[in-house]
Length: 361
Image (cartoon, rainbow, N blue to C red; front, side, top):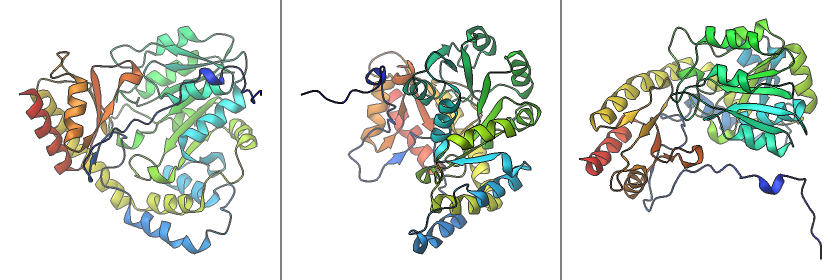
């Protein structure tokens, strides 16, 4: 008996695994996915509950109310905003629209794993540009661009490193890209960045025809469970993406919660202030333990552990899990000596440091 065969290359794909670990504890401290430490806005929760009786209705097909709220929040053109079922869907829409068999898509060494996975799923070829000192190397990206390149993905800030490139550096980099290559700026962690020389990419989108900026509600807005993201691009690019995007791709509850979350500025400032307070404390405490911490502008930190078996990353991962603390292992990024820690509540981070002290001192 013969079975249906997938397209060539599909069985060679390694699925993205959202490794959050496991623990015997009934209640865990989950610091493995960079989710919002304080949870979602109370107003977003109220909006989510308010649509319960309308679940038999299709959502608004173009997420017009949400796009309008996004545009109002950021001072941009709502007609050039597309909302999606998380940034993951928008990444797929972009690749589906611009790359296929024989085309190349460039991403960076420590970029989001869905960049190469989705590229391969659409029969295009992913091309990895090496990073330098856990930071995107823009010259290395340019060196990988050929006449087959259709898309360049640049996560800024990057995950799992937490590092970033300045607005001027990205602008100069874009000027060297061919005009027929789409530059996708994945700014999932933009809301956490307080550096004056950083830009999420809005200005570049306004100036160029070949730039798309990706954003998410999963991090500062803490709506990861609803899968909600958006992108902003030139009218030319947005028209193309709208031809590929599904007609009801953002559910009713996500649209309602997203609008409410955007409007709750007081809660957003509370969440941002929390990160600005707890992150420096966490970094300082980790360094006191002799651990090497990659400088970060986000709500997570990449930490290198000793190589000796009793204190290495695997030992730390297991030691923390035994105490109900889940963090992200980094083997999938070829970083076996590192772990990534999301910032949680003050009490959660104190428990993390206490548990690491037990292991390392």
